[in-house]
Amino acid sequence: MLASDYLDAVRRLPIGTLGDLTGGQPCVVLSPHPDDESLGAGGLIACACAAGQRTEVVLITDGGASHPKSPSYPRQRLIELRRAELEQAAALLGLPPDHVHRLGLPDTQAPTKGPPFDAAVDAIAAICVHAAAKSLLVTWDGDPHCDHQATARIAEAVCRRHKEITLWAYPIWGWHLDPAEPLNRPAPEGLRLDISAQQARKRAAIDAHVSQMTDLIDDDPDGFRFTDQTLAPFVGRYEYYLKVTP
Image (tube, rainbow, N blue to C red; front, top):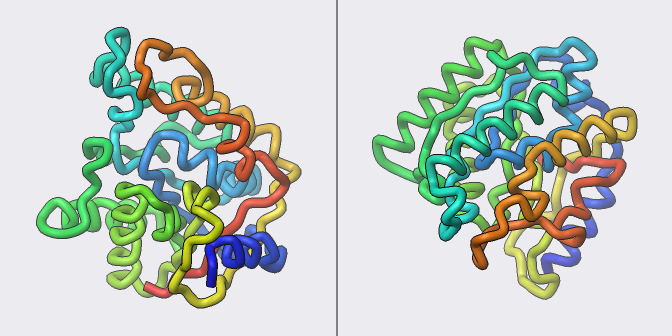
């Protein structure tokens, strides 16, 4: 199956409800970088908070590698900026401050094995247990980014340990795969979530990540910035969740 065919199938997934994803129970969202939570699952987070459903977000890395050559925003200042952006985005989505957690791992260095991987699994599992979470949402392992793939592996390990937790994946950079790239995957299973009632809140949360959405940091020729094209998959009526079997 080509990437274009796979992604077309994702876009045609059946429409489901928040209850279909979470069972009306607490959920935990894993975000490799500050902004992934708003882009891929901001609508779900806003829907869950509006419904009074406990939701926790875990930020895996510090986001400090998005503008590596900026003189005005050296690494520590950028980390602090992105932390503040996440706090504002979370508040806009309805999350209490104590429902946002940070592992603080270096950007681009989320672990896939060894003691750092085990420590990340332990930390997220503890958050899930404390929240009594019944669903865990994570970036898709088909996203072409090392931190997204590592975070997916961490989530799978958590759910193998806690089999009562259902695992869902949301694509981020997978939306921009080369359409002609072959994907050795079965047809996607999952659902679309209609977030139209929360679209405005989601867009406000996305926009709160100013360092990623604007030219605020304009002194790094290699710095990252979303464009209208790269942002397009995240500002529509639906969010997309793929069922994962750990």
